[in-house]
Amino acid sequence: MGRLESLESGAREAGHLEQGESVQQYALTKGGVPVKQGEGAIKALGGTIMAMHNRGALLATDRSLHVVGLGQLGFKSVKEEVLELPIADVELSRSGSTLKVGRRGEPALWVFDLPPFISKIKQLTRYVDSRAEAP
Image 1 (cartoon, rainbow, N blue to C red):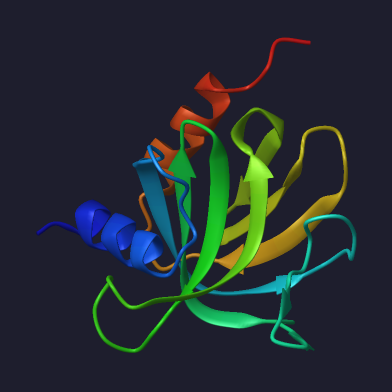
Image 2: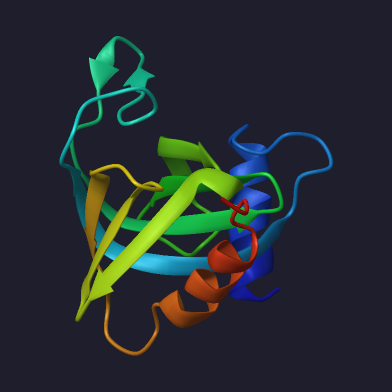
């Protein structure tokens, strides 16, 4: 099973994907922090707020961009979901090994640190840009 399949399986088992929703592209992160609190910026998790995560993934489906934390072992160990945005509203902005994620035309909601060489951010960015709503 490849990374994409493992991530999709883990996200499905964790309840982060709707029925019929499948991961089209993904990118890995070394960690991230929220930069703005607002609708969809931080999800309440069992009475606590996830303010930062280490080792995560951005999962793009035909409907949404899901940002999830990963456990310590493998890519199937999907944990909390810290951000979900409609795919047509997503804006990704990369500068070196830093990625900002937010809604188009608005300030970034999260900033992520990308691992070198294995992040797959170029493929994810192309996919997200192709799904953007026309102005």
